[in-house]
View (tube, rainbow, N blue to C red):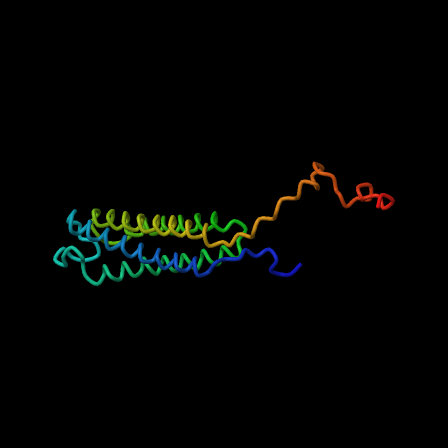
Amino acid sequence: MGEFEHERPVNAVRLWSGGLATAVVAALVVLAGTVVARGVLGIPVLAPEEAGYLGDTGTAVYAFTAAAAALLATALLHLLLITAPRPRAFFGWMIGLITAVAVVTPFTQAAGAAAQFATAFINLTAGVAIATLLSGVAATAVVRSAPRPKPVLRHEGILPDVERPEYREDPRRI
């Protein structure tokens, strides 16, 4: 047996195109969350209140960071799909714990409680989006081998094996 006999083939194009789409979704989650927090709820997330409902450059950095996190998660998923025994289970745990850290982090910063909760909720939503979307992508990115054909009925004892000598035509009849 070769060294790579048990390796799962992964459709890298499908995986990374799904990862890129997930990165766009993660950035949009941050952007939409910031607009809702700042514009609708009046919570100054990532910038002073005077910065408007989109905030300032901090919002762009936040959205870019979410997109980068999705791409890093895609790289992690790719590595796990190739090497780990239960890649989706490990990926779920890792992304879940990383999301938990991202949710708790705003509470370690000097900001108002409303801004902390809003940022934590945005982080939670982005983390859940990344986890669920990439888990779905993983399910379609692993290339399944073709199923083996079922044995012919004669091998199951239902039909006689006509190749056996007792079923050959008697040469004396000819």
